[in-house]
Length: 320
Image 1 (cartoon, helix red, strand yellow):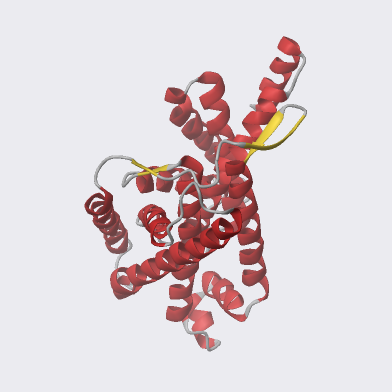
Image 2 (cartoon, rainbow, N blue to C red):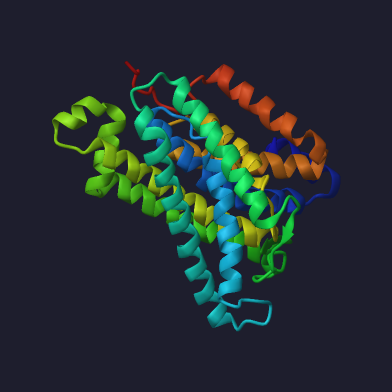
């Protein structure tokens, strides 16, 4: 799709500026979906459960970040050094709160159903999703709420050959990249990360090796919630509006990204998120936003037909 439109732009006006802007906006938007998709794919990789409440955990992260802006008195007149410090503190608060919430959901709702039929935790996940949506409605109401544009999200930070990079683009990309690299390093090198990989491969064998599988699963939910909380803050600053329904929308998109990339694969979740962000942006700009969901899911179906395990998916363990 990008190549076809690039050729069209070169033929029409001899410039790649438009497709360049589409790609920058798509990558920055897709970076948010990637953070949320990582939570889906990590949980599925370990317990083979689709945590449908994960999107609402992301939504709660946005709400907490918005509240934190008020706690610290951050507004459009806040000095840049104080603004940076405040945003870092808000990022920590929203991430820790969302991570803790996700871990509590696992402990209360999913752990007692660990040995139950697969349908039981799935229905529980849907139930938690509705509960958190209603918490959002009670918290900020049923309408969209404006977030102070603290970073001037649409202000141009710099441009190269007419391709503009805004403050919002820079925030999304420069926050997501270190988080993804840190997660990758943690999974590959840290003791708990290795325990997570062992549990994902074979939980019974992991127990025999002395790994506390329950704590490892709780840590996975915690880390997924941390990333969702960070994504919630980025989303609030990037979109400058939040509302209770954003979790459902983001959760659907992020789950699609995880499936497209290969459910259970971290790199696949990131690639799927960015790819969907690019497809959405090009569709919104070139075809029309009303067609964007159709195009995204048509692309998903095409990927599933050609590669049933996703773009870079791996064969997951068989339950039972």
